[in-house]
Length: 54
Image (cartoon, rainbow, N blue to C red; front, top):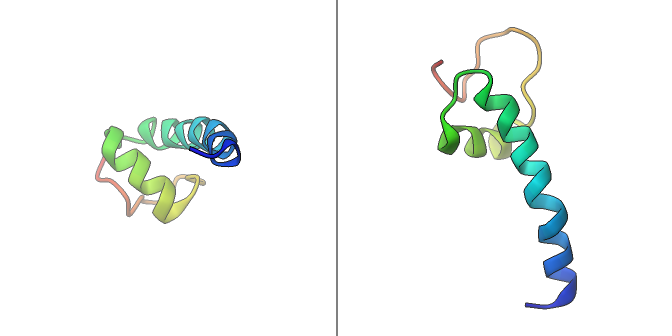
């Protein structure tokens, strides 16, 4: 794996995990949380969440 790709993964994966933890706190399981990060970004406010049914 090229050094630049490895460095990008070292930065992106923890950030994505941080965002996924925000979705997990809203009732999503792990798989839904990681998918929600890609589709919806970070959850905001108290509106109904289309990403998970928690």
